[in-house]
Image 1 (cartoon, rainbow, N blue to C red):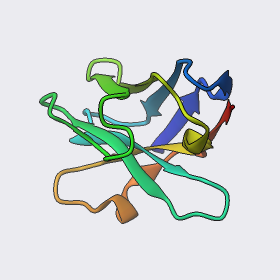
Image 2 (tube, helix red, strand yellow; image 1 turned 180 degrees about the horizontal axis):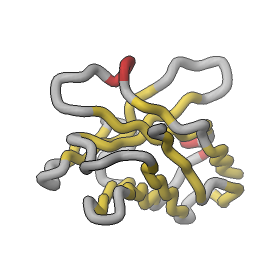
Image 3 (cartoon, rainbow, N blue to C red; image 1 turned 135 degrees about the vertical axis):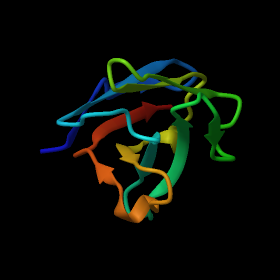
Length: 119
């Protein structure tokens, strides 16, 4: 059974850095796209970043230039390096993975990891 496991969340001061990691299990081949979304209290789920198997990356406007996504196709992992974090980055961060042509709404999702940025 396919499942995603996130790790690395926690408390960090504004301006600091944090790395989130996600590993995919139960798959026979790398997903086409792996990425991260987040959901703040009272907010909707927001796209953060994605990386396809060829290494092409995309970022949400609010994190462009501060966060970096990377993946290892052999290990079926994807990391999110968060730099210069801000209090508004506080959210539950979810790892997601999908095949080509599949929408994020139908992707595989992890259970989420909490990131809290203190001011």
